[in-house]
Length: 355
Ligand SMILES: *Cc1c(COP(=O)(O)O)cnc(C)c1O
Image (cartoon, rainbow, N blue to C red):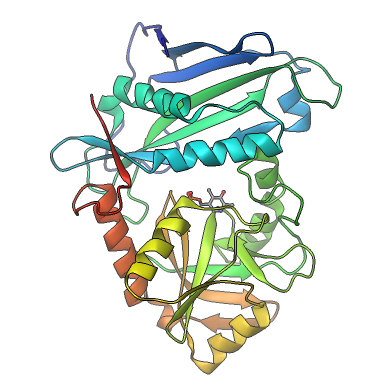
């Protein structure tokens, strides 16, 4: 790709690396590329981060034809910058785009766009321990027309921001509410895609959980509200009697890259991983009879999120005395060591960015 570059007059001031939070400080530039039927993807460019103009009748504002990805660039102790399995994000975005009827972005083009932005923004990849540069590629319909149909104009953009260590003081277990009324996804729907509409529909559940003092929602299957699927923006795994259980990838659950990486590590370590339907009744029963040993969510933002308490209707279970489990900690340490270049990458997951 021949990427055009439009320089900013003045660079922004960098925030304090030790107080970044999540998604608050957008960096100086963004990648933009347009699509039309005649030209395909055209005019790839890196321009100053700022407002995007479009008409009020723009398709995405009405019918939510939008998909996104979430990934990170990590700074190693030697000062190098690296990405973690970016080809998985590229592939997943295309699966999402296919479902939402948006044009494919060739894998190499997606990775090139991400790398180009990271190179320009190399000084925004923070150096404090366990911080990273969060990258948000996204794609949306920008044609102006109120008809519900496949749009004829799209944009692909990549923005990024430095983000803090998710757990500045070490892994901290969270309380999770099993949602027994609202649903997130059904077979045949869009549950397996990272499309904006999925998240709009999930906010009500999140508010309900927060009102009751819980951090996140655990969604059940949309048809019978019986089987555990996933958390708001994380997949979830259960260690019961020494074996791991997690929902299968069958169209309703987001195929997490962290999930896939954890399963690889676990199988490598000899654990039996069951990608199967686990009913909330069996889960709560395991919680009460002492066989539910550990529960953790997996996702790019937090890597791993230990669950200390689960509530389903009036039933509550505390897991591992509300302490981070041994296996949870080992998975977190192993994966973050690979991501930040502190351990050997024997799985070929790291892609260095030459700056
Ligand atoms: C992004 C996301 C995940 C986690 O995916 P990763 O690739 O591991 O970051 C899980 N569930 C949902 C609903 C998500 O949006």
